[in-house]
Figure (cartoon, rainbow, N blue to C red):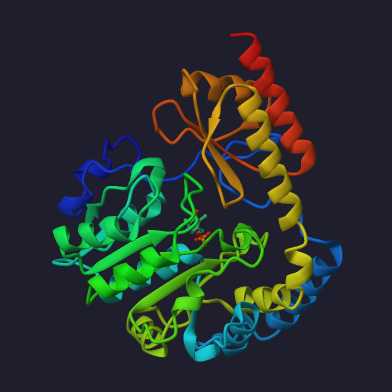
Length: 364
Ligand SMILES: *Cc1c(COP(=O)(O)O)cnc(C)c1O
């Protein structure tokens, strides 16, 4: 093939994929990485050992296909979520991104539409595009909120097949009112999906969309082990819904999509849920500290119920991003004018970020 000039453009690619660039945050090796909302605390040693032992046992049977129904994992996830959920309410996949893809394979696709509310998680529209579903951009209220009235008006205007919410919302951190979800549900015959990737960072005791599942068989709530649970590299996301929704997922999932190693690792990690989540309070403290210091420095952070802060008042986000990077700190420039987003790290990482930003602020 050498010497032959041939590129993606020359392939008989689907027309709707032509000209697209692959999505992904830069994966630079930077001492302080606060750009993709990971839990930056390493997992505790004893939990790591338990996971390795569990995976080691699974390896001895890796000649066989895994449990296609990942039953122990669904039991563990239902136990973790509580709210009277059982394994029948749970579906899991390789990250909640794959859960969303399966959801749109089952309920979206060509001829069907998804209403979302940007600025929101970029993967929602990208997965819509990948599955041939039409993405419709709903309009938020001031301050990125979505009132019940706004949600209902947008649903009436666009008559989507699926409504996507993200609460707390990425990249803004904005809380999502349960009243909004309930009103949206009543305004559509379609699927209402709530991405709760950051639920564990909400104020303690705050009810989540899980409390709305009872009696709402078209409501789907997704969670992930990638954020609070410090398990991003293992790729485990899941949803809770009426058992019929899990049956719909079975129609589109590839058989054995969750490897036996993934299942073993996730089940072992969930047995240590308390330890895995021990850092959440610490992360919330660092988040609140970021809010305080950014305000002191004259930036405009948005209220957040997640593990990150979106802040405005940045004259040249690209320039600040580069100068932070020179100081060994990577944050996220999402292309929102005047804004950057930063994840709350460990206390030391957060200090490095805040000191670097203070230097930049004072020198400009
Ligand atoms: C990070 C994130 C996810 C996580 O996706 P995984 O595939 O589970 O790693 C899902 N939804 C939102 C809104 C996120 O920010």
